[in-house]
Amino acid sequence: MKNLMNCALNLDWNLMKLYDLLCLEGLVRGLQVFKERIKTPMYKRVMPKGEIQKLIITEETAKIRPYTVAAVLRNIKFTKDRYDSFIELQEKLHQNICRKRALVAIGTHDLDTLSGPFTYTAKKPSDIKFKPLNKSKEYTACELMNIYKTDNQLKHYLHIIENKPLYPVIYDSKGVVLSMPPIINGNHSKITVNTKNVFIECTGTDFTKAKIVLDVIVTTFSEYCENQFTVEAAEVVFPNGKLHTFPELAYRKEMVRADLINKKVGIRETPENLAKLLTRMCLKSEVIGDGNQIEVEIPPTRADIIHACDIIEDAAIAYGYNNIQMTLPKTYTIANQFPLNKLTELLRQDMAAAGFTEALTFALCSQEDIADKLGMDISATKAVHISNPKTAEFQVARTTLLPGLLKTLAANRKTPLPLKLFEISDIVIKDSSRDVGARNYRHLCAVYYNKNPGFEIIHGLLDRIMELLDVPPGEKKGGYAIKASEGPVFFPGRCAEIFARGQSIGKLGVLHPDVITKFELTMPCSCVEINIEPFL
Image 1 (cartoon, rainbow, N blue to C red):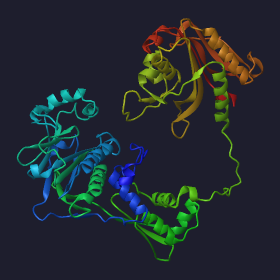
Image 2: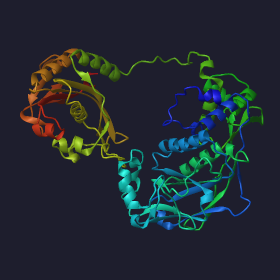
Image 3: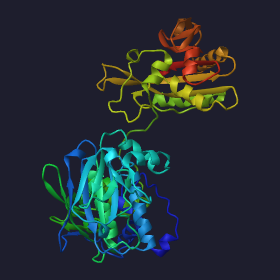
């Protein structure tokens, strides 16, 4: 461990799904098992010698954060490094599986300062008053929410409960507040380096993830308990009267065929060697039955193992991807680029050569971007709506590339003029004839932003695009032409519809001042947007 602490490990914690590797203890343990220096620990849940700690959930929490789980780390020995790692693991879990505390919030408390049983309930903000973590005086929940609006760390979590009529809170039998999840713990039960017994509670809206988080914390730090890798159980009483004991620390067994692993990974290893590889990945395995079956024991630390393919992936990792011999696939097909993507790449190069800068904007946007700001009604856009948008910025799939480019212009207003941007990407339109109810179209959109509209520049760009596509001017012989048109997006008399090969492919023109203003722009702007699929 000492040598490892001197190394620089570049791991993306936010994408990590091996939650036991989010801290140094789990990482070192995993490496030692992989190097076969130690065996995979067996984690045990034990009942206390005296009365079991009990956490009672009231029905008031049902519409806020209905679930909670709990456990006790008994006779744990902290040092400063261990304590810092314990706190750091909680924060990494909050940012990862807990989804910034929206799904699960972790509370850790010095059990010796509290008196059970504990009660998890919900009250009006004005009725909750306690001394929060690292504060010297008591505040009501309302006061705390105002105080933490300027806190760089906690302000990001306030939205989870601030508009709720009731706030969740956990009390002990003497009325001492343990925490107000998911915002802050109470100062009374604050853990320190000298804490010997830790009471852990995880509240949330996702029961499964709450159990996983609890298992990760207790298995990782039970190593420092007097009885290594043992965790003291706690009881949780749900509003319906059902009693559950946590942590579950559930082990389960899965069967996988050795020939399947060899086939999927592309190796030729004996079942015994494959079982050894899996055991090195903390998946205790042995060959059984006809000699082709491998029985794999999934420990509580490996919540990422859901399917046989996850076990096969671990076998490949243990074998080493670089050790897999490269072979030609046994197929007779020849890979080739999709014609539409090839056309897109060719156009990108020539658009850049014409002096335009490529932008890559979001495929999702707000209803306001594609309707109100463009002077259109949302029902006329045939937009595909997101049923459960997480933010107002991503409510619908875009039906035009123009809003994304205009927002990019707005974000770069201070850049020297002129600004010339383009994008070649998909838009999405409702289509009842498709089995999914919608279809994609590949569009090209370009904008010119300067002190003068620059319509002639956009028109010249269109001519250049048509020249590259080998489409001659004129309506005859599959050529192209523009015809005067109108639209709410464009200035009256400064709009034209583009026809090519007998069909309308888009429009070009000078944007209406109202559209420019709504996108927080101050200069004239011209644009062209066409569908490039007819040119395949």
